[in-house]
Image 1 (cartoon, rainbow, N blue to C red):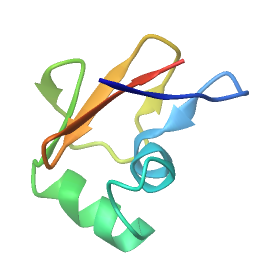
Image 2 (image 1 turned 90 degrees about the horizontal axis):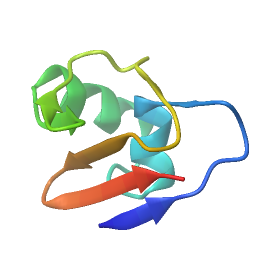
Image 3 (image 1 turned 90 degrees about the vertical axis):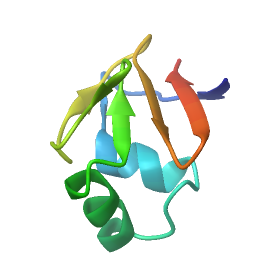
Length: 68
Protein backbone atom coordinates (compact mmCIF):
# COMPACT_ATOMS: atom_id res chain seq x y z
CA UNK A 1 0.00 0.00 0.00
CA UNK A 2 1.37 3.39 -1.01
CA UNK A 3 1.10 6.55 1.06
CA UNK A 4 -0.45 9.86 -0.01
CA UNK A 5 0.77 12.63 2.26
CA UNK A 6 -1.44 15.67 2.87
CA UNK A 7 -0.77 18.87 4.79
CA UNK A 8 -4.42 19.78 5.36
CA UNK A 9 -7.21 18.41 7.54
CA UNK A 10 -8.63 16.37 4.65
CA UNK A 11 -8.55 15.78 0.89
CA UNK A 12 -11.54 14.96 -1.28
CA UNK A 13 -11.71 11.57 -2.91
CA UNK A 14 -11.61 12.98 -6.44
CA UNK A 15 -8.54 15.09 -5.59
CA UNK A 16 -6.84 12.08 -3.98
CA UNK A 17 -7.39 10.05 -7.14
CA UNK A 18 -5.77 12.82 -9.21
CA UNK A 19 -2.84 13.48 -6.85
CA UNK A 20 -2.04 9.77 -6.61
CA UNK A 21 -2.08 9.55 -10.44
CA UNK A 22 -4.69 6.79 -10.38
CA UNK A 23 -6.79 9.12 -12.56
CA UNK A 24 -5.35 11.69 -14.93
CA UNK A 25 -8.18 14.23 -14.69
CA UNK A 26 -11.10 15.29 -12.56
CA UNK A 27 -13.49 13.98 -15.19
CA UNK A 28 -11.86 10.57 -15.17
CA UNK A 29 -11.99 10.52 -11.35
CA UNK A 30 -15.67 11.48 -11.39
CA UNK A 31 -16.55 8.69 -13.82
CA UNK A 32 -14.55 6.08 -11.90
CA UNK A 33 -16.32 7.03 -8.67
CA UNK A 34 -19.80 7.12 -10.22
CA UNK A 35 -19.16 3.76 -11.94
CA UNK A 36 -18.46 2.18 -8.53
CA UNK A 37 -14.81 1.44 -9.29
CA UNK A 38 -13.42 3.21 -6.20
CA UNK A 39 -13.46 1.99 -2.62
CA UNK A 40 -12.77 3.88 0.60
CA UNK A 41 -11.89 1.88 3.71
CA UNK A 42 -12.85 -1.34 1.87
CA UNK A 43 -16.34 -0.13 0.85
CA UNK A 44 -17.46 1.12 -2.58
CA UNK A 45 -17.85 4.89 -2.43
CA UNK A 46 -20.01 6.85 -4.88
CA UNK A 47 -19.35 10.31 -3.36
CA UNK A 48 -16.60 12.18 -5.19
CA UNK A 49 -16.59 14.88 -2.50
CA UNK A 50 -15.98 12.30 0.24
CA UNK A 51 -13.49 13.75 2.72
CA UNK A 52 -10.48 11.54 3.38
CA UNK A 53 -8.47 12.13 6.52
CA UNK A 54 -5.19 10.61 7.73
CA UNK A 55 -5.65 6.88 8.25
CA UNK A 56 -8.31 6.52 5.54
CA UNK A 57 -7.57 4.11 2.70
CA UNK A 58 -8.74 4.26 -0.90
CA UNK A 59 -8.21 2.05 -3.90
CA UNK A 60 -9.06 1.83 -7.58
CA UNK A 61 -7.75 0.00 -10.63
CA UNK A 62 -5.60 -2.31 -8.49
CA UNK A 63 -3.79 0.50 -6.67
CA UNK A 64 -4.20 1.17 -2.95
CA UNK A 65 -3.25 4.21 -0.91
CA UNK A 66 -3.44 5.33 2.70
CA UNK A 67 -3.72 9.00 3.65
CA UNK A 68 -0.91 10.15 5.95
